[in-house]
Length: 107
Image 1 (tube, rainbow, N blue to C red):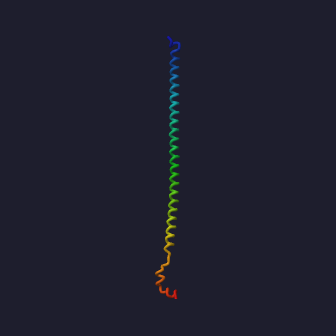
Image 2 (cartoon, rainbow, N blue to C red; image 1 turned 90 degrees about the vertical axis):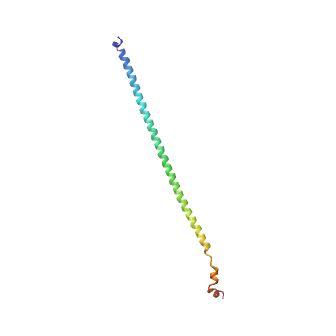
Image 3 (cartoon, one colour; image 1 turned 30 degrees about the vertical axis):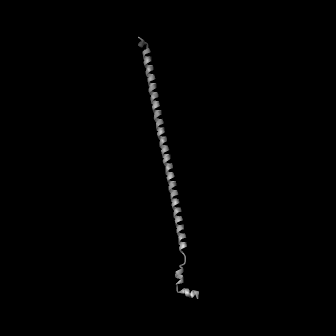
């Protein structure tokens, strides 16, 4: 009987040890894979947050530019109105001619 010498026992023990090694290796690979996936998820999340922050900054800058443009447009409109008022400040010649003091001025 070969089992009496312990050869069968050694073969079973060796097979069990190799099977346990395979299980440990599989568990290690699974944990590494899980960590790797978590790392990828974290990096994607960080990229998305950075992208949103950049987009918000761009929106804020655009709003500031729009406000500046609106202020400039208002100033231009005011200047145009002032010019029109200056053109209207001509003396009314007819009213001056027919006023009673006209004869006194000419005499």
